[in-house]
Image (tube, rainbow, N blue to C red; front, side, top):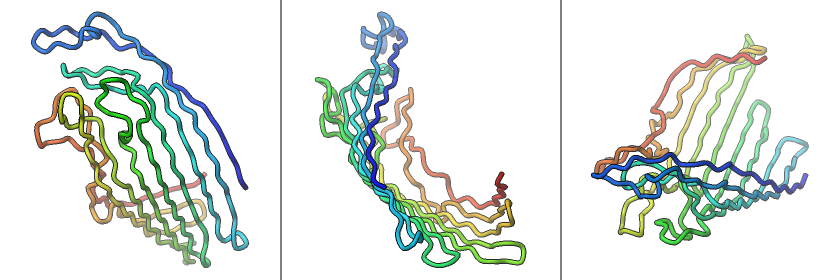
Length: 256
């Protein structure tokens, strides 16, 4: 099957609350004199792709390419007086592709492979904005990937299985707490890539499934991003949100 789609979405506008006028740490006057409105932002999304079946149904594939135009972006901005406001700041374009393949190479084994690429950047920016045209969008990795293998085999009570999951998240940037270079320029904070591996060993009987699992097998501290706090960070001490450490447990499921 070959398909194409176009869709439009929007998010309603609103108003920023009036901020206090603090003599020792003043906020910009436009925010202390009353409420300040911000407008709606919107996007158009275009996608074209295909879904295919190969080798008498043993292999399936899904391939898609897309482009998203995002206009009048609503962006949370941290002011020097430590309060946040929302403003409409320019536009951006996100374009990329996705590939997913799954199948059963032989009886009992199911494999799923996914790969994604996304190039997301600012395409227009207001005068004086610290993030110029070409800046990468916040928190969007360029490459992502996943691999799943599930092998099941007959047992006296039903079926046993061994399942392994692997995921990769590429490098990205954070604009939550950018690093100041000069008055008009900010350096985007870099977030490194990371990989996570999960293992499951268990059994199935009709609608029941039980397994012993190890999530984040190699105890990776993946960087999920930094917080945007009302309190400034200490130099050299960013507050990162990280992946859950290695976790071992028992999982019981029932299908309805």
